[in-house]
Image (tube, rainbow, N blue to C red; front, side, top):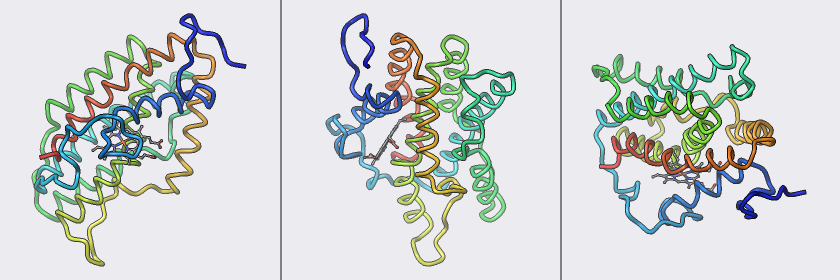
Length: 231
Ligand code: HEM
């Protein structure tokens, strides 16, 4: 049966579980150009028009790594303290920190780049997440979901464009570890969806809504990191 909420309204996707609720909110924030279900009118530069340099791409990898390292460190730390909210999200197979470390090392060792520090934008996102973990740990799950799932969808399309544009698309094309998973990523996503639904199933409506309400900020902060490329 469906619970009756204080405002009497049903949330789209609610019957299917909480992941579907988060997905519906996320898809509404895409532009029509980004995804079939996108609802926003065009505003951002389409990804096929992005013309960053290799150094910009390296900065994007460094910023992404800073955020993933923070999320992965936090989740592992909480899980080791026995926090049931984060326990299901340790070693899911979605972790990106190590893959990014090897891609960044490749830039340094093979191309001779000096590895930059993360930008202030990445640092601001991490500071925001740290504060949110203190105030409202459930709401962090929205950022976690959006950050990891976005990377498997639009993130992969962006990655392929970057690889082809900056490193060529022949048979020996460079393919970054950031865009490879140890198992079929679709299967990992299915497993993680089940875990999110299980963790969130007894959350009161207010807690679910507070989590859903983070979606805009998840997009805004991820957008500042994508800005390394969207130029
Ligand atoms: C899904 C594109 C940015 C979160 C998708 C999908 C596409 C896409 C094509 C697949 C839709 C489908 O499964 O039918 C893009 C592009 C982006 C972008 C081109 C930027 C240029 C973002 C951002 C976020 C985000 C910034 C949030 C931080 C998601 C989520 C899904 C999704 C949560 C659902 C994934 C799933 O259900 O497995 N995106 N996206 N996307 N995107 Fe994005």
